[in-house]
Length: 115
Image (cartoon, rainbow, N blue to C red; front, side):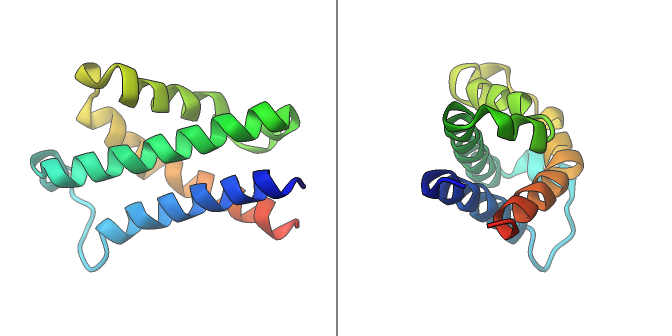
């Protein structure tokens, strides 16, 4: 695997771990998330990083799209956070955190270990 792709996979991994760190020593609670503007903005920034790294990965090697679930949707979320910020739904972002980030982390870890 290309060194740049590996670097971007690590960027994704680190952004996911950063998001997990925001909830260290406390339960993930949607209502607390919704009321904490600083937490929401920090998570949105990490999602931007994840989406941009995914975009760069797919531009470099299209075959990785088959190894990462929802790769296109990850890029779409990045675009939404950046360009349609006024349409962001707290529920949608929360669903990504709870339902999709754990799988993305497993897939990225698997790809990193293959190298």
